[in-house]
Length: 297
Image (cartoon, rainbow, N blue to C red):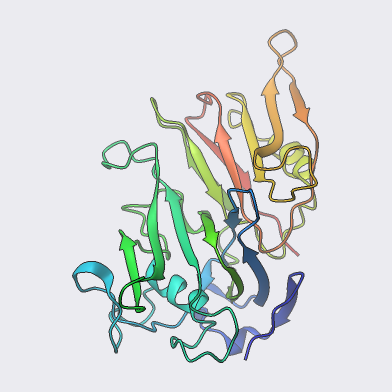
């Protein structure tokens, strides 16, 4: 049974207890608990970071029209979809609305990805899936279009580093995220798309050596041809006491038009394991894409 934590509990587990394929070498496994809740008067946006290897149960069969959950599973071994994450988080991890946890199966959760593929009908928008309770039948129902959160290169060009945006219109959910990182993935490459908003949700490594946004942008400044178009890293402010409440706030690196050197604007902020962030490419980099190094301990 889960216990509602007021702050994220970060635990390191043995990788043998997880499902990370051994072909990529050993690495640390992670189990992180964080609470995402509707904030009064707020949009309640939570950028979420998931480990590159993601361990979530296939709890329900939601492949039927209307995404009405039924008994059984609908995915093959190793496949993971947005509906699996939603089922896990909404039911407090056991797939049933048995009342064993006070807030389970109450409220609603939406998980979104940003579409940077110009050929996709959802280009330049956040697109995803929602779980809520049907007010008539009282049964859970899903709406929207489910997507593969393992990151299929054909549909998610950002690869395993892609993060997601969760919105909580109502309710409070203590979620547990389990998985491990892939030590063979050393960079996060964000292609620049002409005519696009070029927003790239980013799964921040749980064991990253970057402590602040300034650490990351300073390292990015050493990547020739990668940052010169201007890059911002943003977090969403859910703290009602913050003057920036209900806005995206962050830090930007840009090229000084006179000296050609990197300049920084905005206030540095801490990078927290389990939290995701959103990169925005403000202009076309000479290299055609922006590459972030992923150093870790």
